[in-house]
Length: 417
Image (cartoon, rainbow, N blue to C red; front, side):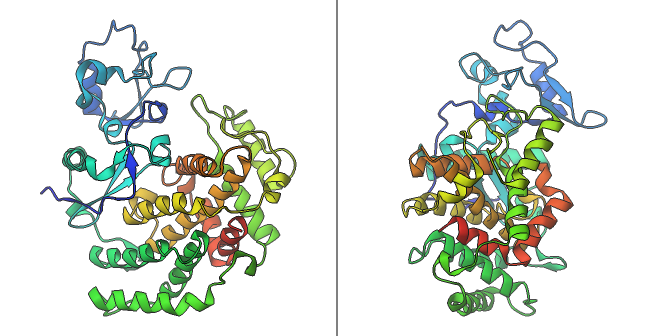
């Protein structure tokens, strides 16, 4: 049964501007899509790379991925940065994953929610038409997604708040509504709003919510919100600096994952080999000297300079607020979109992206602040919920350690000062 699209992020704009960045990521397709593309008249097309066009990702060929040219572009990407499948046969000839990008459709019980991949430069820069103008396309894509995965949104099981604590979809959405109110309350700077979300998460993770649902649950979360308000330091300077080992070293270890780019024309120096990645990661752990250029976007800079480049212009809050509102509103921070993390750990992983973004923004010292933070969001969101490394148990342990030891609050304040 087809279910509707709801909760379109009204503050978000988007249109494709032909940058072709999305044609340089790994595109996983089904065996049926592979056979359909192979049946097209493409063999002698000068704009299409020679075969093989696909690489198997599973025994028996149930899943495949599109191959890439030496420069990182898809085998069907033309010299004018156009998709040859779409040029010759229309948009429906493309694999479904390509048609959906940069949108993410998340099942929420009786409806789909719309998220976005901010690794798309147009999404990060908020360029194009209001997302509401794409509603008809998104409804069509949601029906195609149901066919693609073989189930509808109302078949998705209720998520876990934390291990062993499921909650019905309507009540999950009620908690998200309160978090959205906090993030959109402009009486505080953005970094304090996220610290308040963390305080609500800590308080609620101690509760079982037995017998609480509907309006009673909303009232309870609002009471928690009011209760933690006086306990959340108002200014970032009111929090101590992150601990040398637990805070700063663990943070830079994770930052090395979020900042890197291993493929495409913007691949970082030395990222083509395992040894190069290990060396770069070690330099991030040390946190001294020149920052390894593990991403082609990173300029030449030093760790010491980035730590000195404090100052958080108020104009950045609007761009950052838009990013976090879309991620929260779309439910893109827990469950299948984020490596099956429960709700509260997923929220903590989302908040961790703020010090990552602000650290990278400082690296772009010669770029106007808003443009710098948009570029930082693009880099970080290329990994959030998408890089399989972030789903590994030991990486999840590092993220949880930062949150449980209070270092995440300090990092948010330190880089938001």
